[in-house]
Length: 221
Ligand SMILES: C[S@@+](CC[C@H](N)C(=O)[O-])C[C@H]1O[C@@H](n2cnc3c(N)ncnc32)[C@H](O)[C@@H]1O
Image (cartoon, rainbow, N blue to C red):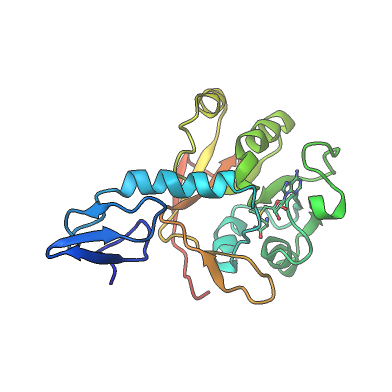
């Protein structure tokens, strides 16, 4: 059984005593005050989950097509796009090519390290970057100075002092999506694997017409 409106662990609880319920979806189980209300430990759980993703060193979560689609309308059709964290299997790469863009796909697996490579001739830099080094990714993107859009989890984005200073000192825009993005681990299967209890946003620079833009996504699309 899941607590009502569980946005946290999404796993459920067990009954420890009459009227006492323990959440089983986290490393350190805790007593739930009221299973009929939104999880009261939401913030703490989010932090645990974000840490887990960020510190796992496992950045292999891939983006579903419905989350790639909304950024395309902000990229002029004749543009050349660099996807720096993407192989030819990436749905960013496939979808942009389908729409007729010229796409340069590079990935560490093919020997191209985003932090070390020369910037290819391109107009836009678009991807979902490795979470474990997202601060450094944005530093380099601002340094490069080309328009970019990176799909990232919104929780904690501005919370480190380093990132706070970086974003304070640069122009950027955000695209907020109406639904959460469920990432997958296998391009063949595309079965949702990471269902984060937080929203993902496109953090962009010189791409959107306003500092915040709201876009609706259709998860079955
Ligand atoms: C969160 S995944 C997203 C992959 C793809 N962009 C997508 O959305 O389906 C980030 C990818 O960046 C790769 N990566 C990590 N460090 C990298 C680096 N320094 N340069 C290029 N790619 C890197 C990881 O191996 C991982 O596949």
